[in-house]
Image 1 (cartoon, protein in one colour):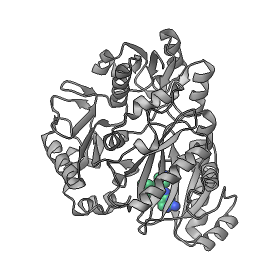
Image 2: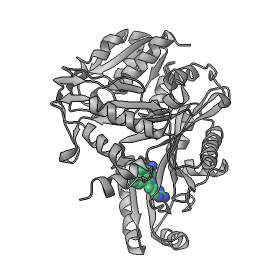
Image 3: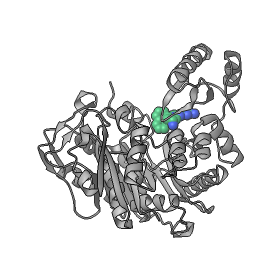
Length: 448
Ligand code: MV4
């Protein structure tokens, strides 16, 4: 096991990793930008090193400065958290060539799964269902039109180097397909320096169900069941839960087994997430693989009782997973609400500033993962998520009741947050029945 690691991230996930390391007896070095210099979690690490100005390019995305901090503090590994450098294969490669372990997957797996066309090819080899479509890159308008008339409209055009909803376009007929194809190619070239696009049948009213997986370097790969993340706004998740209230047990088991097959086929190790789209008839199709720990990992930790961050560090150090598949239970029901410093009344505009009053919730079944406190200044330079409220109860109904209770205890002032919007979601009749697709928030909760 490692003796000392560096955390190349900030905010709640930096604190979450510090906590896991403390329990594992690993010393921590946390890097920070000048915008985060007063954050209290810096004092909870064994060492904190300032690496630059507020802008991510000057700090959390600045590879030379992070590597210098790692060399100076003599760490054995770097935990990238989520976002920032967590899925940059180039960073993983630099870490390892400097003899610093990158706490993430092998570079080859990152490259293969990060390319959506290649990911779909691997999925097919592993007999994981894929959405019918172009079976690889689409070269020109003529080929796109031929494929679309075969699979039927609407179709979706996606950038092979995209992901998380970036670089996508829906086309309802031949004319919008031709225009969309060219726009998508130009956008992809611009954003990712790779113009490769592919097309798929557009699945309407799909749900986003993802499977948590983890694999070690000895060939052990397991799933930790699914999370339903259909409650989203503009590709930003708002609420995540496990189990999915929508899936039949037989489909759940097939979905999770498919995720493990993909992991084995791609020679992956580390924690990871396989994202699926599930249609109204419970047919499922792989969307993409997230080769990192995710924001919503505590939902899975709650229902399985497994500490994913500790396990991720264990497998990165070369140890075996501390459990096998049959040990992984999905017990009770967990729900997470992302608490963002945003004003729901102003189109969710970021709301940075000083938190003057702060009264966090607690009590039975409640977990709060957050780095903030009374007097904390939310910097304007980063993501607006200031914490995650997670509840775990025996049933979904009880989890919703506990979440409502915890949200109503949670007092933050004068900063505006997504807390009142979450209370509205918890009272929504469709949500309560578990009937939510990825278009729900914009169509039902926020109609124009
Ligand atoms: C789709 C789709 C419908 N049909 N693919 C969005 C994020 C990226 N992972 C893929 N996404 C979608 N792919 C087909 N063939 C609908 C979406 C989609 C979506 C997926 C998951 C969560 C939220 C979403 C919001 C809008 C669209």
